[in-house]
Image 1 (cartoon, helix red, strand yellow):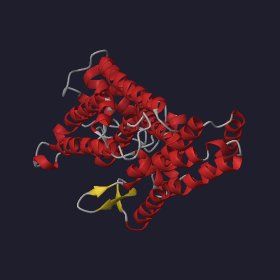
Image 2: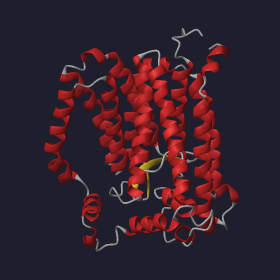
Image 3: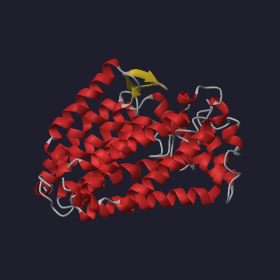
Length: 369
């Protein structure tokens, strides 16, 4: 690839990404300083997240340097790799926090996070190749059938939140590919009919989370504890917050899993409404630049790839924040680029790197460039 391709690199997208990751590292430090002060430095969450962030930026640059069209040619291989890896997790994966979602090498990794990005590449290529055939419901249903085993393997871990992300990515991509309105109506009707069946197959704790959300008075097991503490944290922050490192709910450990699922509540308590607004503004700019890349793409594959990454980041951000403010039942989804987690951070940065690859090649450059 010639040097001129790097002139198209979206440095604003990179700057906003770095800013959001930096906010995440600061919040993780605040959320864990009281409980990890005695740990060796390299074992502290904040140090590990900083290392993940720096190395993840290298992943972003390498992904940007890689022609996304080459990955598109390998889409069936990527799909097979996702199924095989998730199958290995199902058979021999490590269990943590009640879910068999991890593979342990030198470090524990969560393959379902990388699977999101690889599935985006696969679906983007599949839908790009069959855009003109999507008026035939059979091709649309086939795309759903291809996503189903991936979502099922993740659901069995069990990780319902991530399984729903796969469904959201599929919906976002078929919408971007030009799904017909009558097909949208048909999908909505099918979802309504399938709801009782899906409910019957949900695990007990999943049903309980939904029931407690709909009727908080029914919570006799304390399942809504974190949700209530999150609301207290957010409400106590006011306009400008209690100050960085000064949040009582997080520093005194009233708010659990505060550096992962509920990091947004830490932000609201310590930096207030204004701090939350800054983060939301950065996320909006991030999504704007990704959708800008989609509009500039040289081909349907690039456009759909960028739309898929935007869908993934938007959906996870929306659900995580909605859970924090009590508008949705607990799902276990983290806040992209902000919450603690190396696999999630790397996967999101990989996705953004592929968006950069689309931007850099928006002038229909040849593969020899």
